[in-house]
Structures are given as C-alpha cells and as structure tokens.
Image (tube, rainbow, N blue to C red; front, side, top):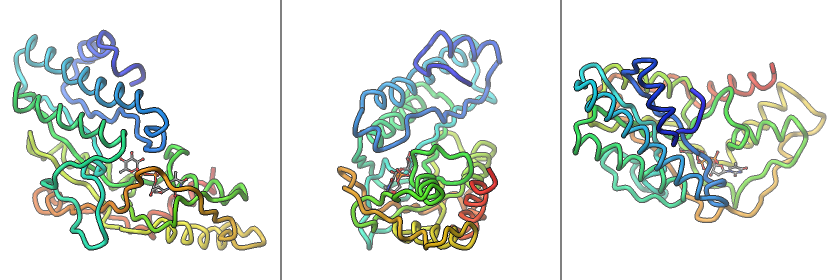
Length: 274
Ligand SMILES: Cc1cn([C@H]2C[C@H](O)[C@@H](COP(=O)(O)OP(=O)(O)O[C@H]3O[C@H](C)C(=O)[C@H](O)[C@H]3O)O2)c(=O)[nH]c1=O
C-alpha cells in the first residue's frame, strides 16, 4: 500500500474497500541517523501514523462492524525500544523495561505504548513484535550492511562509526518474515514477542567479514579492507543490542534458520548478481 499513513480518509477507504481483517503495520521511518538530523518526521510517521491506523481499525472493526472476530492488528517494532546493553548484560526479553535513547527509538516506543493501550482500553485485537537488526536482499541503502557492500563494490571508503566495537544482533530478513507469519498465525492477542537472529557481531568484524568475502568473490587487486575508514561516532550511539528469543522458540516453535555466515553470503551474492 502506498500513501500517507497519517491520511485518515485514505486509510478508512482502504479498510472498507478491501474489507481488511488483518493489518500488519510495517510503515515507519526507521533510520536512527535520519531521526537525529530530523526528528519531526519520526514523530509524525511513527506516532501520529500508528495512532491513525489504530483509530481507523477501531472505528471500522469495533464501532461499525461490531466484531473483532478474525481481526488482527500486528504492530512491527524494534529492540531499540529497550535501550542499550553493556557487555555482560543479559539479552532483551519481552519484560525488559523500555529505555529508548534516540528520537527513532523513542517514537517506536511511543507507538508500542499506543498499541498496548488500544488493547487494554478498547479491546482492539493487537500483537506486537520487536525485532533485532534486519539484513538481506532489497534492504534500503542507508543501512549499515548495504553501505559496506556498496562502498566495497565502488572502491569507496567504508564509514565505520567510532571504534567499530558496537554490537548488533543480525536477523536475516526471511527469518524475520517467518517469525512474523508464525506470530500472525499463532501468537496470542495482547502479547509481545521478541524476534532476534541469535547472531551478535561487532560492526568492525562484520566489515572485515564482508571485505574477505568480496576479496574471494569480486577481487579488486587489493584487499577491500584497505577501504575501512573510522569516522565520527553517531551521537548517543547505543553500544549493544541482543535479543533473547526464548518466548518465540518455546511458545510458537520459531527459531532463526540462518547463521550470519549463511545469510551474508546470500546477501552479498544478491548484490553481485544485480
Ligand atoms: C549506516 C552506518 C551504521 N554504522 C553502525 C551503527 C550501528 O552500530 C550499526 C548498524 O547501523 P544501522 O544504521 O544499519 O542500524 P541501527 O542503528 O542498529 O538500527 C537498525 O536496527 C534496528 C533494530 C532498527 O529498529 C532500525 O530501524 C534499523 O535501522 O552500524 C556504521 O558504523 N556506519 C554506517 O555507515
């Protein structure tokens, strides 16, 4: 669906014309750096936009059609709402307190709270999933892994923020999709589920791994590692994210199928074949 998520008339029309009974709410401004340079659009899209969708669903399903049977509002969110971890901290679980640090994560936390409130106050049938860092084919070029691969292929500096020791938990996009499908089919209404890749990597290790893969698959005469360029750190840069996906595993039988090593080969090959 294309259009402005804050356009209530448009959303109402779509819900009615297509007799929508399931909403999977992916729409968001998602890039932390952009939220630092321009937080307003994140407040509008992520908070106002989620409110607009929730209100439209409540009006259509509850006020007009007067049934929530077979209806479901699935809100896609992020592990960034939990803030940052230290080296020895346990990974985020569904009961980790919210502590967002960037305008992006604060706007997603606000949207999660609105979704929760619509369940508790109005009984809207909602579920929320909070995922770790996605990667794979077709990812937006602003993200880290596309930036690394593109820089290598163009022979340009690979920008690594700070000392490159920040850690992320990498989730292959198809594992995320399988997780969402699983929650859509069998997740309990009102619940939240953490979907993570169980793949914690330091940024610098990711860069070196991709450089080595490209040295084999697209040799350029000199090691791609030479392109690594440490640049000014992101303000308020969260140090580590990691998800404990036990609830997904034990309650719904989901676990990621890709290791980082298998997922990154598929991703790099997708760029090489384009
Ligand atoms: C773009 C870029 C990033 N980085 C570093 C910053 C992070 O430590 C790491 C990943 O950065 P990226 O901006 O790709 O992703 P996060 O800031 O971790 O956030 C992402 O994962 C979460 C779950 C979401 O919810 C966000 O929507 C999504 O954008 O690489 C660099 O070192 N250089 C770069 O050029």
